[in-house]
Image (tube, rainbow, N blue to C red; front, side, top):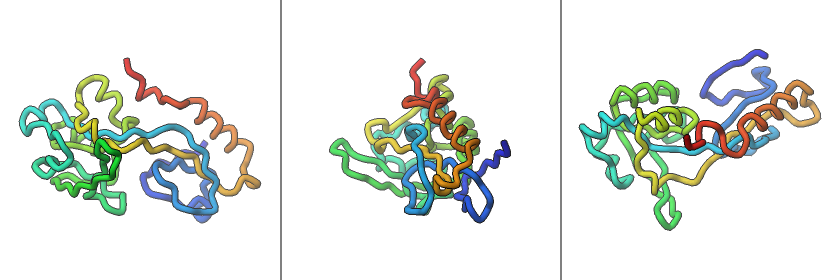
Length: 181
């Protein structure tokens, strides 16, 4: 296996990749997609940050906070929520720390630099250990998913099919990072 890790969207055919794992809404394409696992988003911060700055009670309170901004989405300074009725709500956020990598934002949150909006596969262990605390849980959008994407099935190599099957079996319907311990 030759593993390349990047948060950017790669062109599988032009760049010679057999498979990519993509999260969220998939753009229309000629690629085949297979759902791997659910992706749950959370807004969280260190207990120290919350003690110093207070806990936001609604998404609109985020304007009074330092937010750690993931820069790869089309609208990096916009966080999406839903209200109790399921209606979409968008909030523009600001902060001094911006990064194109979720692990870097997790590290900043652990140091008390602000609130982050990240998937639980990045911060799940920190939430379970209480080194990060989730907030705004009543406003989180419905879960997204991670997908294995690959060129058309007629060109699918047996080793790629086996790897996709392994990923589906490994993560299952409730990935290990979301299991309550």
